[in-house]
Image 1 (spheres, one colour):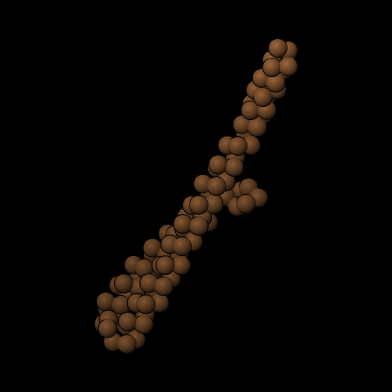
Image 2 (spheres, rainbow, N blue to C red):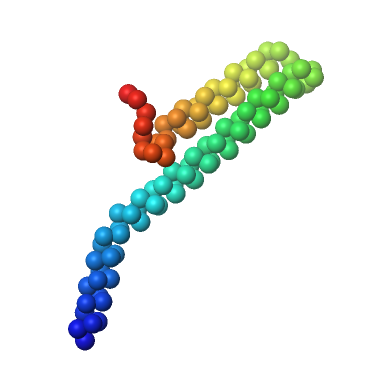
Length: 97
């Protein structure tokens, strides 16, 4: 009976002590998933910009239409890049103020 009590107490200590480590791993996984999603969005936006330029060069878009589309796509890309920059780095948030 004493061994069971000791085992239960030891198990509780392990659970309590390891709780911060488990929560940190979940946070890192969420940040990693968000970073991967933003990087995929960035790459897709870059492709859209290139495709719009190709459409303009091949005559599928007029210059005013292309300029408006290009301006919009680049503004979206800048927004994505800013969100990427706002994510903490893997060593912690090492950005300078």
